Image (cartoon, rainbow, N blue to C red; front, side, top):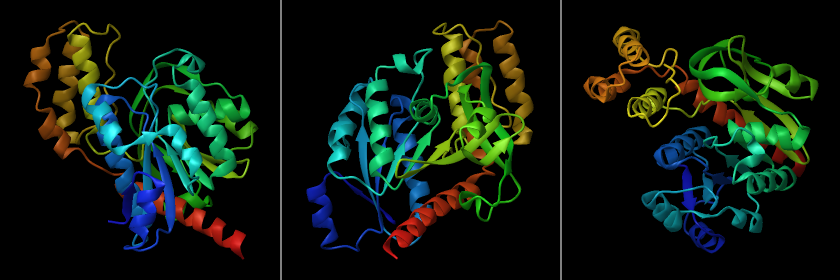
Length: 327
């Protein structure tokens, strides 16, 4: 495996005496809630591993202590993660800041807003490149350019066709059109990004931009509104969670069925169950009887090769930038 996990500078230096020198160092800041914390780490690290090829990429993991955690997740963070402010002591080549669950209507009201704003501002001056996902991408656009996110009329969730600017370095080797998952309640208008000098790598007529980039401070920032890291069953698991909360009366807003989240042969039965639920049958037995795990195992993964190529292109762009500086 090309990804090498370390927890502090002392341990990292010891590991390098007995293993190959790392080509890149990466700080991974995991802001996801308990239910998605482990899966998010796995998804991102697998893409870093695939994108780095045979080169070693050293990853240090960080978490914000203001994000509420259940006991198992908190114990794992205490054992394997470092406080987010420790990243300032040893700047990495790369910084990944994941999405997080929106709680407040206004981002600035989130408990972690001050810490997130400080981290992103620091990264723009101390890291060669950072990749920010979904809510963190929206936050970065607000911090750097004063662009505010907009609440959608209904949740955008599903797998959607995307158009690719194949002249963009991050889209090298892509087809002109790809498929990519989205799941969010907010967006940043495309015209606002273009007006502020962002370069759009991937966008969709249906759901807006997916990947954009901009040079900020001394850093190349990659803004990702879609979810190339998702696994085939990610959207279906998310729907199952939202639908269960609805049938258990833990929430009253209707669950949204993700577009193209299962194999074609499984869509009709899933849609029928969904229509029963939103039609008034808030019955947990409907969800219990549906074979979510089997259907998830059959779900297609048309963005998988694209996602691995995307991370390979990102790492290649960082290496090219390093070579130009050293020349």
